[in-house]
Image 1: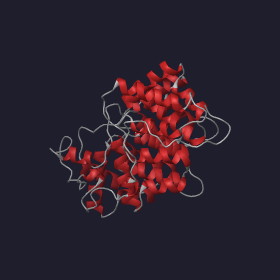
Image 2: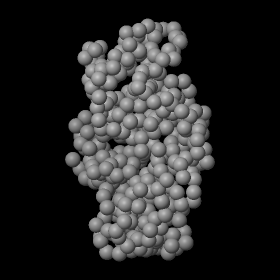
Image 3: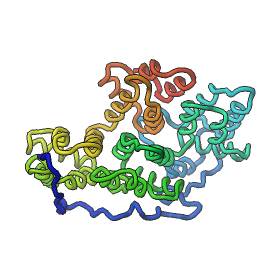
Image 4: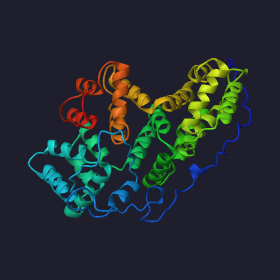
Length: 385
């Protein structure tokens, strides 16, 4: 139970939970020039001819930080030719006036791995960086989405996190969304990219911009140490459920560390079973207990984790709905989700949006945006429901 007065946190930990070393303050793996995210070789090979990529190239491109699922709206373009696409993009940018339609058609119909090959061919042919040319030739949200599409996913997440902590005030909602919805492998790649770009660890910036239990939980997630196993342990689920109950509902004062340790370390399937066991013990949903036991941004983060355990697409559909409702559109959130989930689970996000909000994501975007920006988002969306 949460009392009205401050309390002293217990130093005990539920077991067995890994200790939390200060890994976020260490340099990333593989600092060599040819080493990229997770130590993978990120030297993208020259694009091939004909159908798709030559043998071996697709896998190497994916290892360079691509985040791909099987429920995305964007997939590999079958008749892919990077040289041809790079030349078409160069003409679209360098002609009299920008040919936005060509840019939209190419960039929204190629996977991120293919876009990286296009960018390499563009640099080889023109001596210029594709992102720089897009930035100089476009503006506003159209520019931001196009640049996001040609950015490797882990680098894009890293830059979104930096923007969330840049300037006066921190965008806690963006921090929560990214850190709660990415798996351990993705977070390790994001941390690697963050250090490579900013020469400073993600954990150090989180530490300087947040505080208290909220900071502890964010650092644990940023460290990428959640168990990604699909196996579940029924005995452990019952034990963890009891620990959570004892740390909150059963006591005067909440032991926040227990919530952090279990919700930030256990695997998603394990947490699903733990939440079921918690309901059996407490006769309450874990969400209701979190609402009554903790507060502020820490509460928001724990609730986001629970929502992602239940359904990440439903959580992100809610975030999109929030970005589109009310006066003005939150393009920062909408652009991020549409781009970052376009090859992972945007089809499922669309289904959840329709189920919960009574209209399609496509129609919501169409009614809230306009021009080439609207056209691009609708192409990423991939269709009406």
